[in-house]
Image 1 (cartoon, helix red, strand yellow):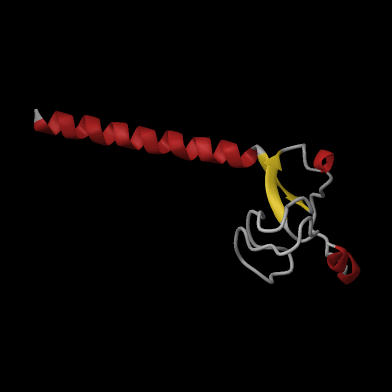
Image 2 (image 1 turned 135 degrees about the vertical axis):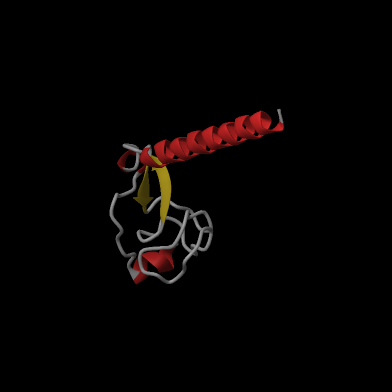
Length: 95
């Protein structure tokens, strides 16, 4: 009896793991990186220039090199771009 319980528990755990992996993959496919819309401290990860490597480290709002994940197809509607740009020094001084 214990062997049946072990097999059933193992099979259930594997199924849950498989479903979680598929949900994460589907979620990632439904989003895209959108540059130039992140507010200071609200970027999703490393910037294009490589001056920092993690979430929440942006110093300037709407920096063309910072990005956030958005729903696929909505980036340009929000005023962003799908490719990284570099912010000019003059623009940084204004913000």
